Length: 195
Image 1 (cartoon, rainbow, N blue to C red):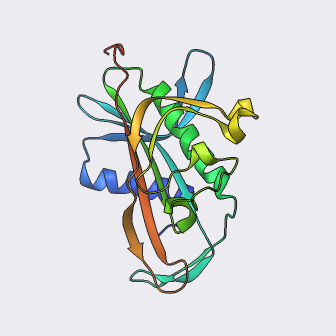
Image 2: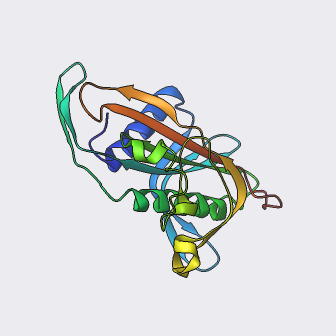
């Protein structure tokens, strides 16, 4: 259970340090791409490879006490699921850019208790984020258009193909107590330069 996306990032980095102390990890690392400087949520560097990680933590309202100390959690509802989908796919596209080294792979990770993210939309219903749906069983690939291409700044072209498989994360009592996660792995780009 996490209070926020930053809490998720910190918890992941701490678990990594405990499980694999030989892997160095850094939060909010600058990445230099061809035309800009961007920040990466977490960079993990092992003896022979690196993993660039982007996190999303999207919640619906849930309140309760969790853990051995009964820590109080009050999660807010982030209602705009279209933006959650868009931002997760933006992360995948960014990670494709960052994985231009032969020794660097990527991981886009989202944890959520909002079933609108993993549930397929009703048949025949098209929304402005139709191409950006990240529901169970979907495969993300190719050119993704926002609102049928009427808002070009949101267009994303994915070079890889990413089958989506949401997994159980935790089950807490009450409404919106089911948490799932989706992990999308990005391979190093073919022809990436070795270090």
